[in-house]
Image (tube, rainbow, N blue to C red; front, top):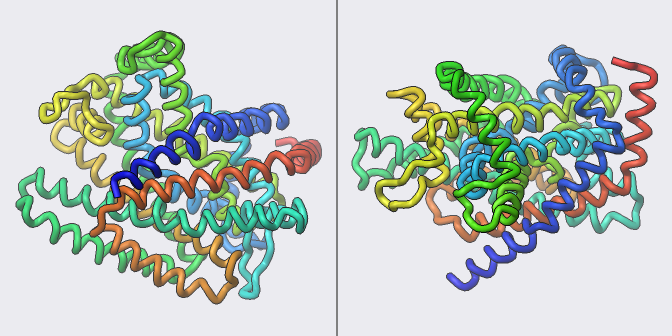
Length: 467
């Protein structure tokens, strides 16, 4: 079993999520950014304007409001990557990794924009009258029947990966986080942690079932209310620490910029090797956090009530900006200002692990309750990720097997939420990571081949409606 786990880990880290895939993801984003004449960056203000307008009821075709479509997409992306992923990037590549995470987000905005544009343009209506879209549909409808095999692969990888990366490993993280919190606070003994995990799994299953049974309308409504609240809760705590230590912010930003080009002692070795480590860590963790290029977010944006693909695309790109440029940056600044990235774990004698690093930094910044922000942030983030990914997986399954599979998929989804809290999922996590990475390949091929349509739609829209 250990040999299989080691082999799968090698496949995931060296091949599926290796330099070639990362280069393809970033390269596609850069190509789209240039092809769009940097429109996602230039029209950032327009995106927020359209988002505000998208909160209102709209009679355009679609199932949920443009605002709720973005919140549904963000419910799946705003999660452990914003807390643990940022710390992991710093632990591997030093503070300089954050700069490369920013660069990844800036080009990733063009990718996310393009995905949503195509999702709305090529979406379909199923026999229930629900709007379906995403990479499988814009590959099939945009590239033609000779490419349906590629659409099939995306849907297959998505339907399977969802149970791991978006379900079991998330519920496992939430349940164990609660158990650790209870033990650390002295509320229960270590021997009772298993019972807490079991109870947490049962409660999570029930809550998830109550949300997803209502389909896209209930998921969208839930995300539209919960995601802004939980984001403000976490960002508010981070912002309080930053404002309290505002004089340390310039030095923290300079440290990020300096280490991005000169390297960090954390990684060791030659300067160029250190810089490359920072780049790879920042890019990989940035992509893990905002999912630009994986093809998941356009599945949610395809359900938006909108009369124009470009409008929804302009809203969609805000997800990458808010996820990485805002939320991840807040986490990074807290860790650097509080010197969490230089702390030694008293148990292992090594630098603190990624989860401990973030918790330590928040507890130092907000003595007495900072660690609760991280713990409860993790719990809420993992829960909403389960909700968001249930929608993605269900849509992929429907594409493969039709609407009759939906009820069975939802039942199995709820069951896996509970099972995920009670099982050891190291191998499952690795397999899900492999499938998750494989989703990106069909999507990126579709984006590159359909890029002329993206550029034309964008040019025509902003020529007639310059906002």
